Length: 88
Image (cartoon, rainbow, N blue to C red):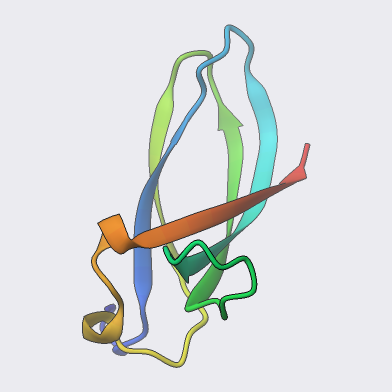
């Protein structure tokens, strides 16, 4: 959680290609790993990376939208992340 007790997500974006990626943006939905496709999301957040060079990685943080506190979320190994790239 951040200073205001809002859920903050820290994650790594990796460019595995030999080309630069400009204006990378996306949305991530965190759900519990249950195997059920209709399970209710626990949290969601958006991210934006102005530019990421070939074979480079960048650590990012984002405020997550959720009604849960950090201690109420399952451990990371019990979460599934659905990633939607919105740009480029």
